[in-house]
Length: 126
Length: 325
Image (cartoon, rainbow over all chains, first blue to last red; front, side, top):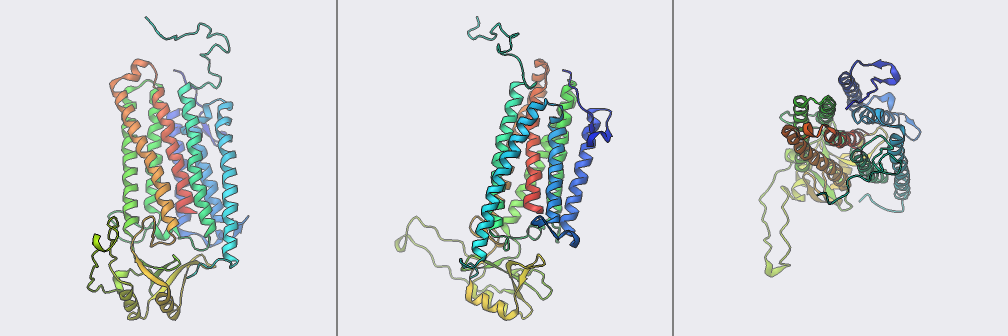
């Protein structure tokens, strides 16, 4: 079976000669990202503790790096890059839409309940 | 004689069947559909975790202080072992994708080798998770639970955690035996904690450098440490029991919800890894037996590969939202 692989990542910045090479390249990329996450998680630099859009900058970095990792796992390990655009969109956008919706609803509700607790109507420090 | 219709004889027509509008085989597409629905299940778990965490945003345990152990090594190493587990899972994803690649080249020997390495990686991961669970359940320092379900932990003058065994002297404990004649016959005796509340209070009073750490997170992002007088007052007025380790109802690290989500999320994921390993083993034997060689295509390896990568993908999110954020 002939399988055509697209052999470049980072929008063509890094090109590979074979699919095997690309796999190792992606592994190195994922390992670097994980290492950065762990180092940031252990040292928690003071400069990243400032709140950006309601959340610590550090947490935004973690979430963005996670999505980057998820992208490379799906695109290169699961070969989404080589699938038809219609299949790719069907899988990816369905999941993204539903997950974003679920997250919004639940986090909003959790935040509201927290405000009920902290405004003093419910005693919980005893 | 064939009893089923294999071909409709109309394959060349658009609606005659046999064409692949998305260029993916039926099996592969169904694997993608399964992955999407399973992804929604996991995001349901993680979103519920987020809900509970937002609800108790100022009281949630700090994961760095909970997962600090590395097997065979003493000391405080936050995140190191989880990072190792993440790396193992990514590595086994790599061997899986190499197996798929070797399958495209119909290279049976290489597929066999890489499938084997993938299975080993999966087993190391599941084993590590079992160890994490055991460590978490066994507990670390021990704590006191209050009437309201809050957790009081003990720290020394420098703010370092102190274990109950370091300052409490266990006395003789008489166990009141539960007999079926004086109670409900189907109710078991509970386990006795190592210490009684009174022994903890006595031990605490005889060590003047100790203080109590509550669950409240202060402005600097640390747990609040009470003054000595406050500590004794809290302990005497509100402490009702000793917690050592964690289960679904009590949790020495903080709110029981934290333990519940730990068990459910990592448990559900671990179950996926386990079933992934079982499926990989089945495919591994099929590869050895030459099933796919005869079939002329290693697509089955590709399908099970999709599942395996998905498990890795989920772990990436669990790692971030449970351990890092």
